[in-house]
Image 1 (tube, rainbow, N blue to C red):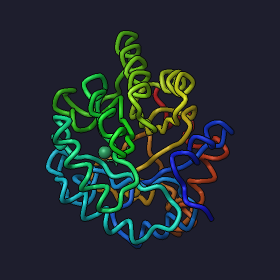
Image 2 (cartoon, protein in one colour; image 1 turned 30 degrees about the horizontal axis):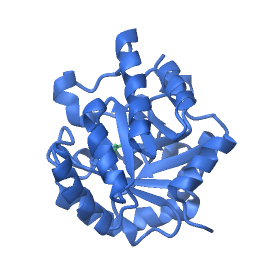
Image 3 (tube, rainbow, N blue to C red; image 1 turned 90 degrees about the horizontal axis):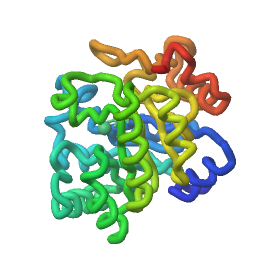
Image 4 (cartoon, protein in one colour; image 1 turned 135 degrees about the vertical axis):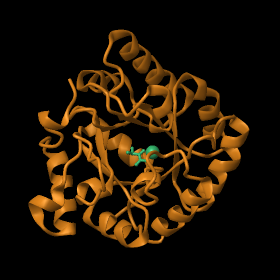
Length: 264
Ligand code: KIV
Ligand code: NA
């Protein structure tokens, strides 16, 4: 059982093998997800909502992410561990380097940052200095107040073209992975085909190289709003490990996400 690295994910993409990612925030869930075969675990700043009970991800700090990264790290044997860089922790590339260092030293294998063209220099700097970057485009929740709500992005052709251009620029800057969130499926497909690096989708249709979900949605314990693109696998299985296996199987077989989980 060799460890998943960015090279493994690249190979999965080249072989057309769909892979799965899930958020995790503690050692016990991380260990269960890792041992059932989830390839990528993300210490997401979604913790602001699902752990801390806020309405958005903005209150999360670098210390919050670092603490949960240390917890998740202790549960992992195989999965790649990505840590989210929280709101305003990478506003300048100097801040990005300091804060990404803290997250790597907490046990992350890669850091994730939300944004496009303005981040290119930061992506190069981090990568050149030994910190692999996963970029995040589309509905980037740290910008929810700029978007005026959690809304699907890239619906009109100008915005779709901008997101596609940003995806290409991000790859050229050195990013090794890309998350696309809540964009129309045809746009996610075009991005996945245009890029060499693997693209992980959430609310982005079935044609990305991998899928990611928030664990609380998969296990049906999110309070309040449950996104339409998500799926409660605990409901259909009744057991946590079986739910995780069902998610992995459905992604591998192209069953999830189906049309009712997709924006067109
Ligand atoms: O914070 C998070 O959980 C995320 C995923 C939804 C991609 O960024
Ligand atoms: Na996030």
